[in-house]
Image 1: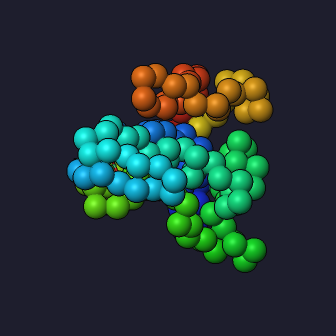
Image 2: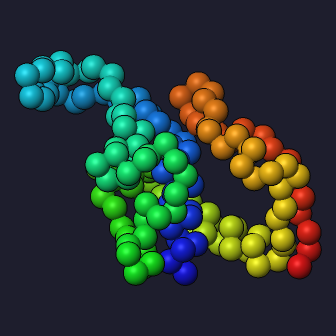
Length: 146
Ligand code: HEM
């Protein structure tokens, strides 16, 4: 199901649930380009800057599952897809979360028809920010059994 997979990826890219990850501290003095980050400094990873990098995702401010599809409609992996962060301390629940997102979305679409109460183009899909997390703005939806 390449298109559904691309939609789930695009939802996570567009939302950027944890745009600056969680706070970490460097365990030793780190030299990064012309900077020195002293041991113990709190750092945040700018995950959103990767998820919205226009070199990888043209028009990143637009919701477009095509960001994860190739010209034949096959699913296209991206090294810039890192809503769960990267490295040794990345999200421990990534496998569980990805499986649940796919299963819940497909189960809803198999069993219900979803209808917007306003014109879909009038729904504000720009995520809202609370504290250090992003979340979708509330909107009304009509859910009909298939
Ligand atoms: C869409 C859902 C989720 C997203 C986007 C997400 C994202 C993240 C991010 C960005 C981090 C910080 C990683 C870092 O600092 O490099 C993190 C850490 C973590 N997440 Fe998640 N997470 C999700 C769901 C879950 C679930 C379902 C679980 C558990 C069942 C979970 C457990 C954890 C744990 C334990 C850590 C800390 C890992 C460590 O410190 O080594 N997450 N997550």
